[in-house]
Length: 325
Image 1 (tube, rainbow, N blue to C red):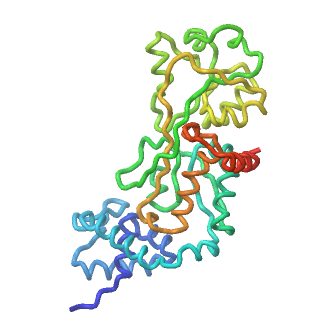
Image 2 (image 1 turned 30 degrees about the vertical axis):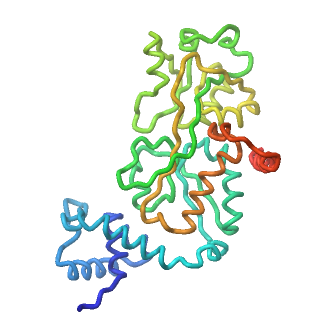
Image 3 (image 1 turned 180 degrees about the vertical axis):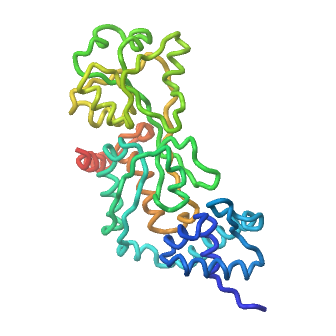
C-alpha cells in the first residue's frame, strides 16, 4: 500500500476553495512556487490535472468538482479530531476577526460583541467591514471570517444561521411636517426620502407596498448605509426608513423621531454566514456563538422580546446596555 500524505488533502481543499495557486498560497502561508509544487504532487497522486487554465483563470476539472465536498468533509473531521483542548487554547488566540456587516450592526452591537468575545478570547479583536456589491467571493477566498446581513445572494456552499428579525420604521427629525397629522401611505410618499442602496440594486418591499397603494417615494438622496440615512434625516427634512434597533439606539441622540410605517412589511431576517472550512474551528465557533447571542442579550433584536427574563437576566441586560452607550 502506497503511503498517503494527508497534508495534500488540506492543500487540495484550500486550492479548490481559493480557485488559484496564489490565493491558496496566501491562506496556507506558503510561497507561490511551494504551492505550485504541492499542486503538482496532488496531480501526480490523483492522476488528474485538478485545476486547468481557462483564459487568465484556473478552473476545476470534473474530477476536482466531484472531490470538493468529500475532501471538505474529511478535512473538517480531521480538524475536529485534533482539537481536544480547544477551550484552553482560546485563551491564547491572538486573532482579528473580520466581519462584513451593515454599518448599523457595528453601531448597535459592536461594543457588546467585543465584550462577549473577550470573555472567551481576551486577546481577540474585531474589524467590521462594510458591505460591497463587488466582493461576493470574500468569504470563499478567506478575506472575511463572517458575513452578516439579509444575504439574499449567499452561495450554495455557505453555511448560514438566522440571527434575528428586525422591523423597519420611519424616521424624521423632531418637528417634521409629516408628524403633524396621521401618517398615511400617500402623505408618507409625498415627502422627499433618503434611500439606502440595496446590494445588487434589488427593489425593496417598502417600494412594493407603496406601489400597491398607488404611491411612489420621492427619493432625493441615496446613501450606502442605514446609519448614513439617519445622519441625512437628522440634517434635513428627508424621511428615512431604517431597522428599528438602529433607530432606537442612536435616533434620540440625533434628535430624530421614529414612527410606525403606514403599511405592513415583513420583518427582515438577518443571517450570519461562514465558509465550511471554519465549521469546526473553535475560535470561529466562539465568534459565531457570540454573534448569535449578543443581539438577544442586549434586547435590541425583536427575537428577545419573546423571552421571559429573570431578575438576574435583567441585571445582565443592563450591563450589556451600558456597553452600547
